[in-house]
Image (cartoon, rainbow, N blue to C red; front, side, top):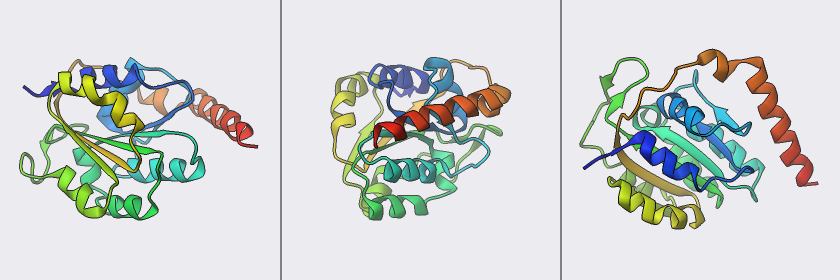
Length: 195
């Protein structure tokens, strides 16, 4: 049985601390900001496909800080080249989650090309990711997520999911000046910690 995306994210949220930057896109982002509010949530909506590239930038900028990327299959398909760039850069602190529901959910939903046939873990493996995990069961995810987050990166986590609850799609909150200011201040606090 395929797990629901929000159930997976709730489980992940139990393992994310207050010092971790979480970079999220579109449907995963709406779920995540409802499940776990934090000034260190960086929302990449509006730049479809760039979530993994943004996460790579944070991982390279703060090598001692675990960076979590919440990507979707549709978003990743818009920027498959990022897999090779991430693998080549080899950030040990990056964990790249891809929630695969076979849909461009944000604007449709419309089926993604290769839906049900594309081996995303295989693509990451071929690109050269250090650690790769696959999940289609919430129980297995719950049992292994601690180890996944401790693995040497770049880590790729391919999860087959289906939509869970409907969460508010509050673009004003995502892109509002207060949200951006809170993120900027939280990042400055991290930077001061590295001096």
